[in-house]
Length: 428
Image (cartoon, rainbow, N blue to C red; front, side):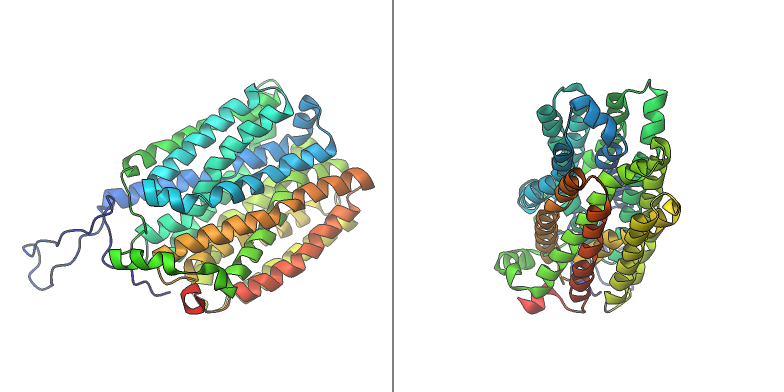
């Protein structure tokens, strides 16, 4: 993908001064880029932030039965709880571009990490379902704005390495997701069996993620990496006229539906099939861990392809086979189904990569990221709730798994449309 984002802005949002000619006499003066140490700090910040974008959710999935018992939740109420993440992502994610323009993306992500920390600390300390949901919403608010701004920060600081940097933080995100799924139950048992301690311990990792973003709080760039002329043109972009933007939003929403159903309900599917709680958590970890290597590979491959449709079809086929296995032999082939669904869930880093590729400019990526993710998460809200309702009223997992498989078909169709070689600027 070709980037026309020169000259680069410094972290304070002003154009860089010319480099003195003394060190080299054979090249013209050019704008100075960010200092190497600052770029390394951004990389560390991206990785630590990405590690914290899912543990608040997958740790809850691993302990959902204990939380339900402790808070006396019904199956429908638990379905509402698993629908809270996409709802918060949709509501708060749409605010991210405005917050980034006013305070800078670095400051917003720093505040997001602080909100995650506070929510994870408060959530286990409050009794009752309402308080638990409110504290969860605080953590999810921090995750929401950070979700939207990750592609923006990549475009801002690494405009010539969108694929590799998207792969890096996607890999860190998958690692944090699988780590929380795998070790939450063992850590809970080691700390006396209290689900409150098992959920609250993840606040430590979130607190560590605040630190590298503190020096970037002063980065007030309103449109990452864009000169003033490009910034002035950004509001004229009517993104709702872009068919690619709508296709990307639908693809993002349907893959998010599958991901949050998996994170919220897959351990319970295995436990109801006779698998122990610890093994069910490890199976979820396997599903999430598949994204660690693939989340690094898929964006790099996708960035080199003019059309990402073949990758969409491959990931969707893996999901359909995995759901068929869950329906026919949930415990007998549990490890195989976990691997296949983990491959299918790598539609998330693919969607992030396409967000970065479907716009010529950083300003366009800001708007497309907010639009696709906010609309997408709105689309994903009913899924986990409907699974809970179907599970409670049918008394089994046949209908919920059938729903999951059926949703994979429109996901593949939307992904094929979103993967075409075009940009939102061309369509708008």
